[in-house]
Image 1 (cartoon, helix red, strand yellow):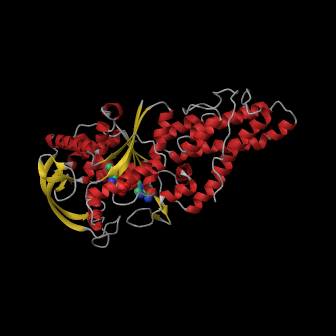
Image 2 (tube, helix red, strand yellow):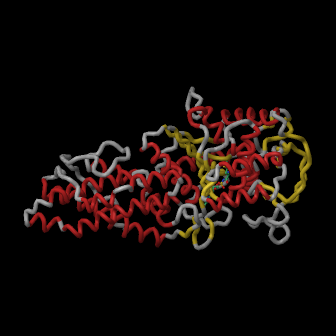
Length: 495
Ligand code: MSP
């Protein structure tokens, strides 16, 4: 089994913010989960460096677009490392390998007869790198997303015959109802397709910043086509001396609703035109909001991920985002919300459970997990959960899966309260063995499930539990007998 997961590639026109980190973390959780299943995984993220969104910012700052890319691409790369993303490659669209393969694919689309020369006139948003229809425009000439003035553009350029893919796309959506998830996003994309597709620009005049059109040096490839193709080109050169395309294609894409149209309509059509298999799936998530606004550079309400990570740690950030906001929906995040989940759930519920379990095994059984059977009432709580988590994560339901896992944390805490191991110890009750075994084994199974969400803290706890493997394991599949190690508090009290 192979699993290829991607994030959008981010524009290098400003500092990365928490919204970018969010998608990267989501993809990372899935990548780590699939690795736990023993699958062959490739996880891609990177930066989008061509087109007006970057060229315009460069102009404003009086630098070249390449300089801007060289300034911000490393910042995005660092952010991925800081949130503990386990990406296998970081693509930059200015890479030679990318540009070369983009030209090959675009040439193929041209050779297949899906490209023609024409003129387009319309309202254009340079931040979206997209034309707007009359019905989308705000106050006569404003972008509905960025609220900036649109420019009236008339261009002679190359067109992609998107319109001829209307039927093939409808068929695709029909045959594969879960091509785009969640379903309400699928319906949105399908409605867009059904309303009638117009051909779209495939190129722009050369004075713009981009990959040259192979058969016409006066034009560069429209940034969206060059950008989308990153998912394909990366497999060609992302690992030295190896072409990974056959091994990993097709991809599972994670992205937010802002770029649904490009991914759910243009992209599969373009792939069909190039005779490349369409993606396996697209999961479309919502926005993280701060005080009701989407976090975005242009709207200027950005929560700095460095500060958040310094305060709460990468694990807590990873946990909080998917616990607080139902993945797929828009949702509010706030420093107060962070703090409260950190204390009540991470420090008190999970951290204490870990410390209590280790210290009781230490105190009552000299640090060695007793060999015993699990009690049926505890076993019942675990029955089927690992399978449910897998099934939910197959649908990229990160929040629901985390809910199920957190139910186990709570059940284990409740089990401690019900069984009162300290009383059992006082009374030298034999039940202490199954109880301590159940707690240690339950903590292990739960922690393995949590591992993709919080790789650091869970890694330390698994080490302390004497578990070397990170593969998913059924509750009860490991007997007792392990000597437990030391564990510093997983989530120390905030200053
Ligand atoms: N470069 C294009 C994407 C090309 S992909 C072939 C682009 N870049 S972007 O820098 O604007 O990134 C947009 C993506 O960043 C969103 O689709 C989403 O994945 C992520 N997010 C940016 N802000 C976000 C929030 N406030 N909340 C959630 N995700 C956010 O579009």
